[in-house]
Length: 185
Picture 1 (cartoon, rainbow, N blue to C red):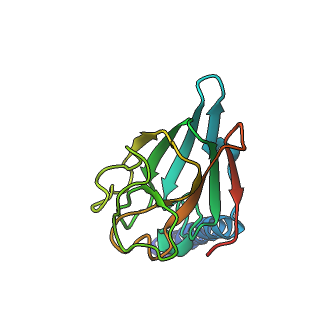
Picture 2: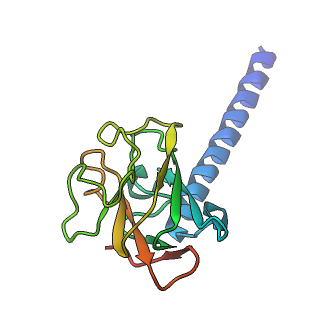
């Protein structure tokens, strides 16, 4: 009779420890979402080929219910690139619950509910309404031919309007790409 009791206590302690570790990991992930820190490995620039490569991750954190890019939403992250450079988004959906897509659109006062024509040729993942499931993605390659302010937007209906967008600034005044935080809108 004592053996099952010891085994039961060991199992309970093990489950308690596992639960504590899991809650700690979830809390750490949620905390990193709140901190809004930029990871310098997200952006790589090659001045010789005039190429900006951006690791764009949908649902990186639980921020905004997973509807975020790299943990940011509502314009809280700004990617700035020189006009005429080759831009490559290495897009991947890490959201365990929802499919996501990417489309670069004109900066607008009222965020659209779903897809609109992209601001630049090829500035979309495809599957823009269906999105990509967890663990999937694609590369997006385009050349921004005009300077201005744009949105990197999830075009799955309802996602962009729920805050799943960040900013793309295309500038004639910069000579290299950069990432910065901004106030959310």
